[in-house]
Length: 577
Image (cartoon, rainbow, N blue to C red; front, top):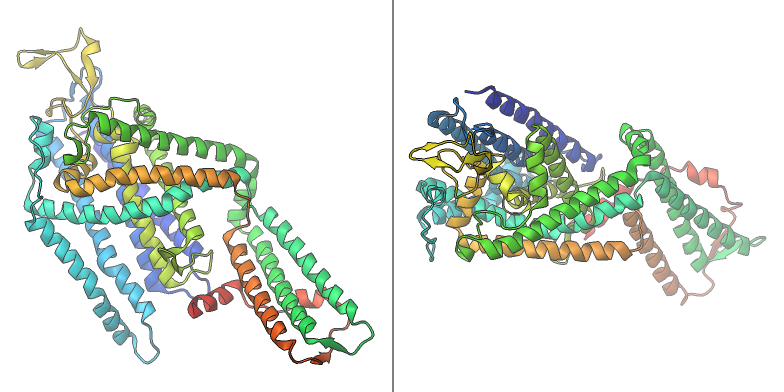
């Protein structure tokens, strides 16, 4: 067996380890610092890391199949005999099924169990009783997984796939009932992932590049805005106090207004202190170092985003025109009839492995950040009902579990999207080529290099080896034609939401980050509460209190006041909601 196999698996092992490390950093970044729950943390990290590792198999899979063909002759290399390729693809398939099994375990058991463990927590029960209560609530998910598996095992599609005289196509149909059942369960999980892809990833991709270009989430902009708000709050306090100079009492309305301004000042001072602490962190020092390159990074990210969107749009049109079997098999195409820009980029980078691997890992991380950006700004919600807000350093364990599951499902949808829409040629055959000159039973293109052509589904199966990733995806589409149609039209919705979000983002007034928005909401709520009380208090004239304890305005005393963290206020609000 070639050394290429060992190189590929070593690279994948390193990337997979890096993905789990990235998951740990991601989860710890959003985890509530005042409520660290080991079970929720570990499950969230493992669920996200497993999905990232699953998506990261694709470049390694492409490299393996591409390394079996000699590009100068269009024939298989000497070491790439039938037995070697069988064991090579079987190993990759076993890793895939193992990771998919873990994703199913997290989706249908571990994440729901941990969620119910913290949601149904009661001080009257011990840990064993908590676990039993959560286990009873999780049984429904296990039953759902079992039913899906049984439907995939014994169910038969109402419309059989068309008969096509292609060895590649017949190979997709030649599978065991167990593989069909697993494919059906995976297809159902992918369908949920498509909803996340449309609802969170598309808005995130439309706004995140613009945020990088505007630079509106930087700490210096936050500091300037908060300092201005603090100055206004102190000026308003001085104005109220000036009205009662020389008097011993203050009206109840002004008293409540003054209290509200004091609360606002304390929260702003606390936020400024947090910013000062964050500015000393390593992450912020790195961001400060990269600040001069921020616009260039934003332009590059925007360029990559547009390339991805254009590739998806071209693939949608391509499938509609050139599909070998139309809607009956999810618009699978045999050979791209239109130019795919991302396909060409990845195929070019694949010639200098691991450049395509580095690019793909960067693309995966970017989609992860875009999805998380959507989750943070939209929140974990069902329709118009917000269940949890995802906040830096202040996310409850339940919100952490929810967000890790949303990210995992969104990344699974990305895996399908890359194979079927973003770069279908690269994901199916990589850089494999074959000699299209046959003399009897021999292929010889030594004198006809122009007859060495890229592999596609019409190529000879003894030379063109499809990737395991594309085989699993295409098999899933053929065995679930109704779901494959939903996947296709979901990408139209994905493009529509991206365009709408991008247009809105161009004309939307820049706002401060999510954390400041939450504080402003709390302050507005406090102001509204005080005003309401003030209006009620107007019916009782003459209500006054001594102003002697105010004296002159002392910002230093207020600045040093001990105040509760913003996450504490937010957690109380979430609980009441």
